[in-house]
Length: 331
Image 1 (cartoon, helix red, strand yellow):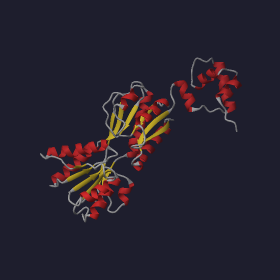
Image 2: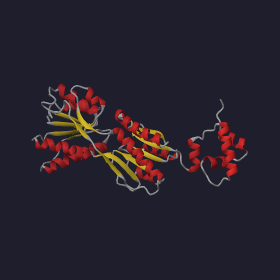
Image 3: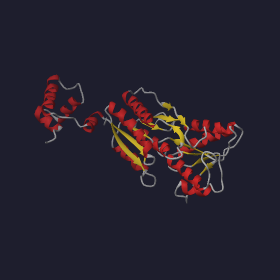
Image 4: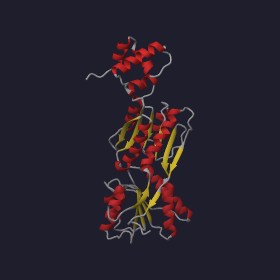
């Protein structure tokens, strides 16, 4: 069956393409008899306006660009689901861009976003910050950042305070007399590492101590596990913290190989909770971070930015977290 186009509508109604476009997009400059004739042609032919073509006439595309990292897609998937569910409610479509370390050129992603004339951009990626944000801002594109609290007039953010979470966790262990605490580098999310280090550092300083437990993965180690399996032969800790589930599992495997009992000899905590933390043995204690809500709230903030020119600038929405103790911690 032939697809009905705007050209067919114009021919049926005996008007120009511009007139059809104005009627479809609700312009009040078209006289009532002509508008009725065009609408009658639309109804007769069953014409469905193309969202992109319709948007170009309004300088809107009803498309939101979404930038996410390729890593940790299980967790990222929940964010995407929340965002898409809210986007459907407000009749927006999502154009997904993924960034893969060492493969994707970040500048090309920005170029694609600008060329696609999206109405706004939602970003969940620690690598897309300033000056990339400033580049997007020059095009007056509304931006919502997920996971990072951005201080910029043109960017809103929805985040969970990971620094606070690690501060509270570290303080608890310090008050129990346990100060041998390590944080494993997440090479795929340096921003998260900075937050974790800041939280631990603040907790140590509050007790008059210095935090020196950040474990940077050497460049010649392909994985956290490759590094930890050797490192734990000569080092011991009260608590080790990983950002992602795969890192926490690497800690568990390295500990097992070095006859370190978890949680009796050493406790393990993962920052980002996923279904895998409850599937492995021992089950991994972690922070329940509302990934779905991060996506849903971010899209709602975006719709507010698009619906009014008077939307509050630099809006930052903090979502709560909950520590979920499992088998890798004693309490």
